[in-house]
Picture (cartoon, rainbow, N blue to C red):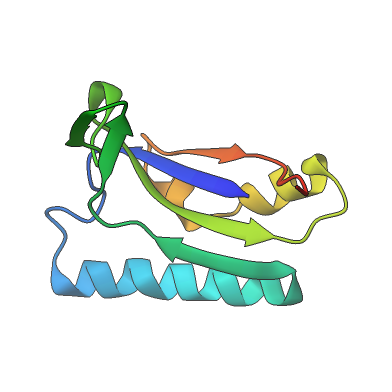
Length: 105
């Protein structure tokens, strides 16, 4: 799984044309993953629940936003890391991608 993080919302301040170009880049990237792409979606607003406390969860620690996820089929974590290196999210200088193995229960 690739968890995509940015500082703030990378779409804020973009024109409609710029947003369309970003989405086209995402579409091309996801099509390029082909059969290795299992699932992936952007995240909207959320909440963080800790015991009985509930707080806004979109911009946690230092305005870092977990913007979405991709689940890919890879033979190793290193292969998944290679897939992540061309992700359009990384065009944003504040973006990071956390690559994690999903374990069976």
